[in-house]
Length: 196
Image (tube, rainbow, N blue to C red; front, side, top):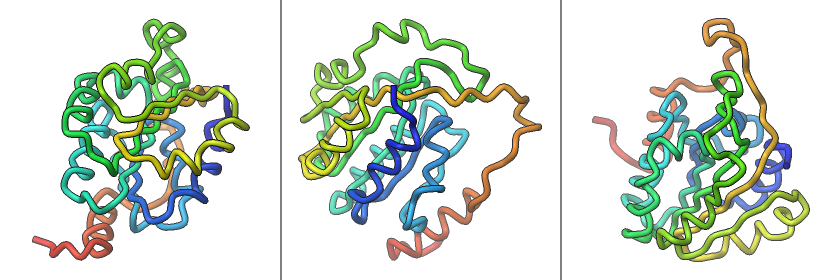
């Protein structure tokens, strides 16, 4: 398994101008790596819905690359989204799945059938244009530049180490950064979308 932060760091130089969102424990750390926060959409506490939100963004902004760092726990709550993405086939959609085999945010409970599920195989069978799986950082680093040039929808499954959090939610140190409202306002300004 790979350190999730190393995956984010390896991706950053190949981001270009892509819009990026995330879910899961490791995905929340994207802000520590990002160099263009106005093109980052923070959708924390949206477990099971972030992929659909990113998919909608890709459909609504076909000239923008859209990247999601998803978690397997979140994807399992809404597996139907794989068929929806494949059916609409947005060429600008890059779906990274950071798979740590557990629900790290809620204490590390194992995800059902964690070691037996082939998420990239599921995405391929659903109809994604391209799918990849990595459990070695060097292989990921050597491949990411080419992957980001592919025509979507692209699915990239990466086995990562779990960052289990056991403290009750109210006692956890909050990551800094912008609120959801600030994120939306900054995004609207960046994209030239008039505020209502």
